[in-house]
Image 1: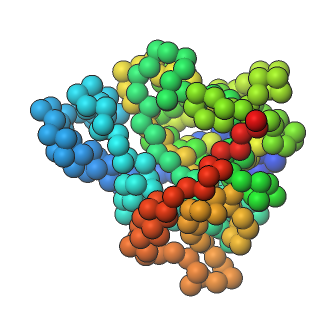
Image 2: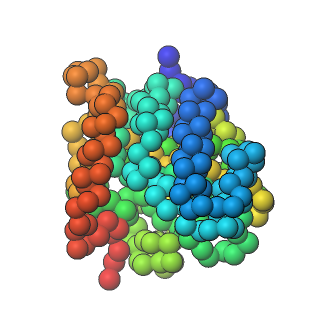
Length: 291
């Protein structure tokens, strides 16, 4: 069943961004939350924390644990934790149906750039959690400039202006890849070329998805609440095209032409990530930064 209306698809094609509510269900998201709850259990035990905050809800627990030891987050990102629940979510039919509509193909590959973020309270404008203006194309090599990589930003709790939702510049994707320079949070758009247009707030409820073109500028904002703003940051693309991260593994998630090519084995997925992460990064790095 189509997840998006024709009007939503047209809106994405024009603006390079679409805030789509109710794409997912609680049943889609809860296994990921359960998986990371279990991961926090193990991590808190490994760090021998005196207060493991086991009775706190998911949107509060990480903040309590982090006050005891900031190392709680080490190894949390998806390619390091390699949880089976996350692997299963990569195949989520509700998500892939919408992705297929926006990319115009059912031959879908999970791009290697995938993240989970637990954004804690932070009143400062500049920190690890507050990524500056950038385009996702700037964290891929030039080989992928013609690959239609679709960013899927998925909140695991409601994303609000108060808890640090994104700001997004619609329509700018038409200008292509802008000049990026080194910034506090990695590659950031050179302020001299940043378009002077009003951003939109990426406030969206849990079960929604923000879809973005690879050249759509966006940034994060401070979390001014006592809740943790959890989110997934996934990317999909048509199969068989460069990913922009040739040193990291890609996986077919849906295929009508060759169903046997779909990666359904969590052990294989985990093994290939483990092997890739054990290999030194290329000297040029992953980000595209002008000198």
